[in-house]
Amino acid sequence: MSVLVYTENWDGRFKKSTYELVSYAKAIATELKLPLVALSIGNVSEAEFSKLELYGADKLVLVNTEKLHTFVAQAYTHTVYQVAKAENASVLLFNNNYTGRSLAPRLSVKLNAGTATGVVKLPASYAPFIVRKSIYTGKAFADVELLSAVKILTLNQNSFEIRENATGAKVEVREVEVLDKHLAAMPTKVEKASGKMNLTDAEIVISGGRGLKGPENWGMVEELADLLGAGTACSRPVADSEWRPHHEHVGQTGKVVRPNLYIAIGISGAIQHLAGVNSSKVLVAINNDPEAPFFEAADYGIVGDAFAVVPKIIDAVKAMKASH
Amino acid sequence: MKVLLCISHVPDTTSRIRFVNNQTQFDTTDVQYIISPYDELSLTRLLEIKEANNDLDITIITVGNADVEATMRKALAIGADDAIRVDAEPVDALFVAKQIAEVARTRNFDFIMTGKESIDHTGNQVGEMVAEFLDMPSVSSAAWLEIEANKGIITREMDGGKEVVEVKFPFVVSGQKGIAKEPRIPNMRGIMNSRKKSLEVVPAVAQDTVSVISHYELPAPKGKCKMIPADNAAELVRLLHEEAKVI
Image 1 (cartoon, one colour):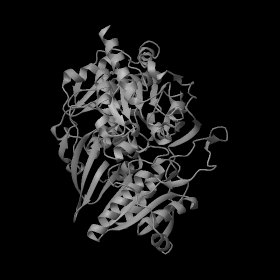
Image 2 (cartoon, one colour):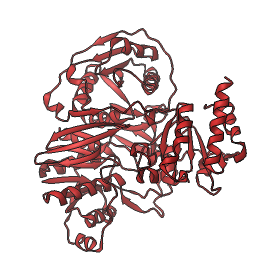
Image 3 (cartoon, helix red, strand yellow):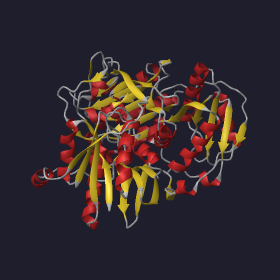
Image 4 (cartoon, helix red, strand yellow):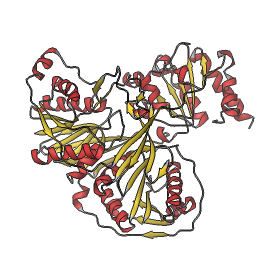
């Protein structure tokens, strides 16, 4: 038996969330006294993949077939399935992102496995197997007991710290069966996001709401974000008014973010918006309305005019950076 | 053409989330139920397609007890053509997906649609599971959908990047924000018509239970918000650096 972790790559590279996931998978494998097998599919170099031994992978299985260089849910599912069978995997782990949320449910059917998506910590127990997941867009947690022989988990970003645990494992390139019928949903066009920070990966997010009065006033939001290496986000009314693109909308019907720091400028803090941000480690609210509900959720607050307050914050960050 | 749209019956987005019976059950007191927002947007897009090409029968399906029928009637009032309720308590995602797949298997839909996720358990699992049960291709997180004679043309949006997928019938697609601008509100005529539309109740098929929720918990209450005077905004930067250590 083994624990299998699927390690997604982005243009041949891994992300911080990959290392979090491998560290998390290692902790489970250690508890179950099973080897940890990392699987990567796509155009990944052996050198890049080798890095995962540092976080505890005991075996590194690379499937680099050209037909699988672009993600197609059915074909990737069949690949993970073949490796899971060959390695006799009893726990399968994925990041809780677009890819993981496509693969985990499909494998759940193929392996008759119970699946918990969006898990936030290590299992509370292994027999019975009980793990905590986020529900109601972060408004609550549920402890889910997985009753099946094979278990599948998808891990929320920023929920587990990276742990080094070198094993010295070497990459093993493996061939798998790829069926043409599984490639039916192959994209005909792929447009990568332009150089901008990916919001769900950002450690710091600066977000603006209707209080900023118009799209022409986002200069200071972007300046502060650039200074802090942060991503920019917005509330729903701002996206709906097309002041900002829809992919910046954070909240119950937009994106859910879990950064270390979320600064909300001119956002009142409707319950739907808070649902998308309340897993952030530190929340800051800046609003001219002292009654804004965001102040009940925030760790730090400033009641004041954003157009006066934010430039002061920018100056203070510049001063802090200059003194370091 | 025929489409099967999966509708979830979920607490309204403004609901206070609370639990009862020693934190083992969702507290339904004063909770309003709605069509899950992504399902509602998906329905809206399907109606736009129906109106443009005049050839799309929209059947909705929900797995649940009789309580969900009010939500299903609302979808019929908005414009879906008919409805199927699988009469069972939705145990877990695999159970729900199995029920939908069994209904779809015998009724020849050209494609199946779901919302990206239901906003209660936010599992995001049922669509892909249905696709796997039926051995169909799937495209998740569709921000746009066009239907042509024998295929769908779907734009996926992920983290600011985009993909265009052309996929022949049959397939499963899940809709996210962007698939339609605003959800439709039923009008009086729609509400009247919905009473005459078919809502068929079918029994559930067997499926092993693979997961159960043993306990719910609310996030730990937040400490009090530390207020900083507006004229001393620099203090915020100091606190974030020295106390919270996040910058």
